[in-house]
Image (cartoon, rainbow, N blue to C red; front, top):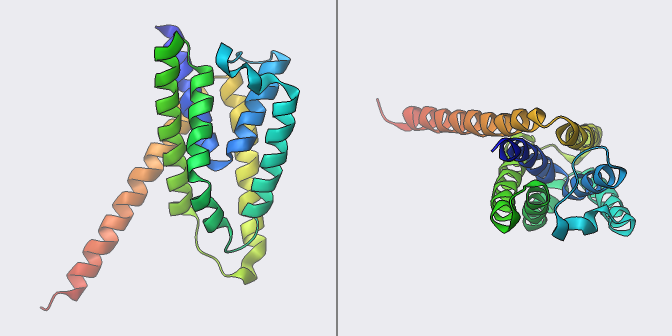
Length: 194
């Protein structure tokens, strides 16, 4: 039972990271597992530890990160890569969850769900900026790179951080939803004749 609690923390954290930078998350999982610093991956996901897969994920992460720094294209990239983000979250979750196929299935479902939530929150919290503010887009994207890189390492080494990441994702979603709901209520109230 304790192993499932630990694994769920890792899945929540890594799924959240996969919603922001999926390839970087998978690369960090592979490197940490290959070096033996954190937990190993489940048998079917041993390919993540292979250096060829790690190099491929690093190259994809560089491409994602570079594309994310181009104003007005970052939203298009986010929409187009949503299925990939969910698959990366599912792979990260299944690779960390013990218990054979039932555990891996639960890990994949939770990982994909939290990756979707993380991507959704990213879209809600990112302000739309004109192309003249390319510096703001670049700094925000760099922050997301650091968040994913350091967050994935922390989650793999110290699993309770994953619960904090999952809680943060849920809190951001709830707050954004409340803010949107109150905004539309206010608009409806103003639109009604007195």
